[in-house]
Length: 224
Length: 290
Figure 1 (cartoon, each protein chain N blue to C red):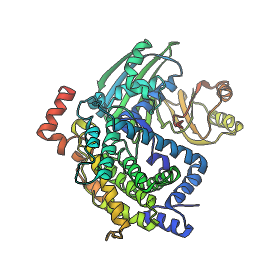
Figure 2 (cartoon, one colour; figure 1 turned 90 degrees about the horizontal axis):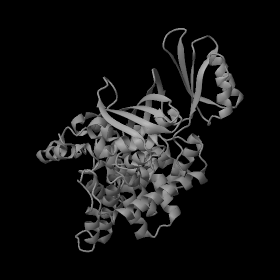
Figure 3 (tube, rainbow over the protein chains, first blue to last red; figure 1 turned 90 degrees about the vertical axis):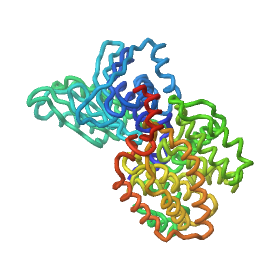
Figure 4 (tube, chains in turn cyan, green; figure 1 turned 45 degrees about the vertical axis):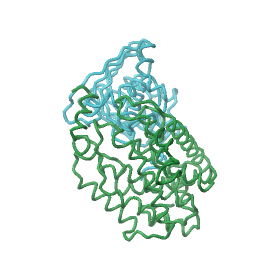
């Protein structure tokens, strides 16, 4: 059963929980995955998003989210102008992704330090979202929990090393997903946790020899 | 551990504990999502404050939506409130609900209740009831918890999404939530709350979600006004002692089955109903230029 504040709530900027609030959350997640100030955003819109984005302010919500605006932030309305003022380059184009959810967006972001990331996700109703792809990896992220993303070499015992570190910090794992490109090659694990992750813990994870990179994505359920 | 999957169970828990339904809902949230009562009350109060702001802004809103389809009707209706057939309280509530919904359409801040498309109904009905009864802020916050509990049961047994259940799932659920909240604000017992929910939802079964151009505007904005009033009538009927022959959980079951059997063309796809009328299609073309 959904919680009390999923029914009365959330506080949001209209007009649509799926096309506006959910879109802002998708942008917010993509921005957090990039982890640095965005200078360029190329956004592809699929299905209903591509059809109706202007009337629903989906473009403003996505871009606002990328700049860190929450679904209830009134600046979402003016997100396109704000982005232009900040010198952020952006574009919206339609795309057809076979079998994707009708409210899917692909966000290709470039950060001020040159980092790039490609995030694919859908707004699945009521403002809830699902990130389905980060770069080449298939993932399943809702943003409801803080997440630890670890890119590593596919070797025996790596999961154990990471979960041991998490346990040492007294953090409980809520959900976990492991995926890889090919046996023995690059792999990715995503752990959603009940508590926010600390920089120190990320450093400990990064120090494990098989780890290529580790980073945290804070939850986006921080309303209040 | 408190658990409820039906309105009957929710009502029974409240009766046994000799408390309003809101207290059971608060207890549930404490046990399931580990949020202390005090914090829950603060969060709900914030929701009410946003609702009230959006309502007041709506009654002064002249701004048109991006599509140009809606905006300015709440002001007209509010100005007419003393002249109408239905009386000032009813027309003020209708104007308030239209206003909140117009604020939503111009990308203003609202509270989804249970959805953005139905965001005007609960605030407008509660605001009108609180004015009439002189309810204080704590009673209003309590009523919102009761409303939420009702929505939680509907969501668990049917749907609150237009894409799954049509507009009955969004505005129908909001009507049930509002009617139940209004009974509690009038001092009605938990079983009367249940009856009001049954009456409210029963009379919106089968409602299509067929918005023009797929936007949350036509018919959504004005419909919020109509359904806020519908919820008030349901609460009045229940308080008057009128019984729903079909009990509330059966009504929710019917809502679920009707929602499933409705064609997808009238479930938020803009592929049927009002959206594909001659005018609906022309407007769509004008808005999206194709």
